[in-house]
Length: 399
Image 1: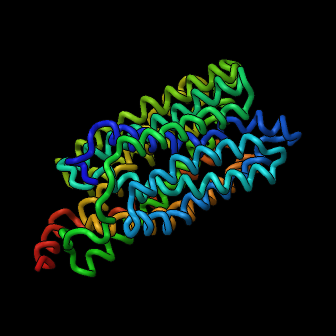
Image 2: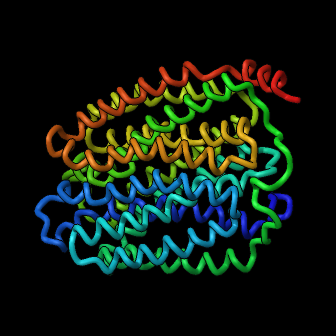
Image 3: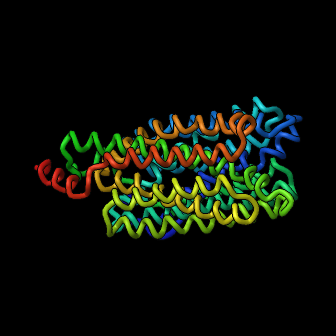
């Protein structure tokens, strides 16, 4: 299955799957206060560690998911994704204790791991403008984050936290049947198709891969800290101004919806300008805005939150674009799987530590820590080969 043969409906479903992937991973963080009350847990912070398994599996399971995507077929793996994540979400809704929920969320995380190493390579293969395609896909994923805040807030308020898992679970299962009907079959798995099209000398390939993994790790730390902590951070910073869960959900969804547009802009720019200077500029923005947000409250904090989420979302397309430019299609799922396994495996610590960290030090310290993480990201990206070095190396390595 190639983009040339793929009509708009399968492409839409692949983008929508990205939205679902992020939505499912953030339902718990958005509804954690209601879940804690239902389970008799005194503080929501004490419940946060139980979701760590989901994020650990989101990373670790990316390796076999990527391998099976390349060797067995990406279309088949996407069918497993739609049905697996849908039924496991319904399983989460049936849990009756924190430990049961922890196990169910871990299973959900394993199925959620399929999308990034499989769905994105399937979407961008043979795309003439991969940056634009990745930007649109990133927008869809981030709108899923916004939808998680909006749908979970409404469903928790009117139907309870369990329906916040059941409703999107049923939607995902329906999408799986739809994808099976409209996505054309793959005649051969990607690893068994045409000869290699991308060539890089070993030293530049290793250097680029190391930068991709390291920068993805620090970026994932920021992504997990913000997307899992913003709901409760907003409660604290808007205390006395907004208290209704549905209104808070709308405000949080607004942050994510506005910030999501950054990926469209960055995606288009990545088809036209060099990766390294653009990436460094966005990381510099992160350093400044996280530091500034740490010292604000009320509606001024809300504005700062929009800006720092713009910077977090704007950094996401870079690694996917480097994979497309410098990794051959026959092995993109496996390379992406390894990168995601390392970066999300390490950054899952952010989810585990989030509750205890905030309980001990507060949100101000968290935002200052995120500013420091952005500094580390910038230092990592300084080691990225320039566009000229990569192009020269590719010419030398070509047969």
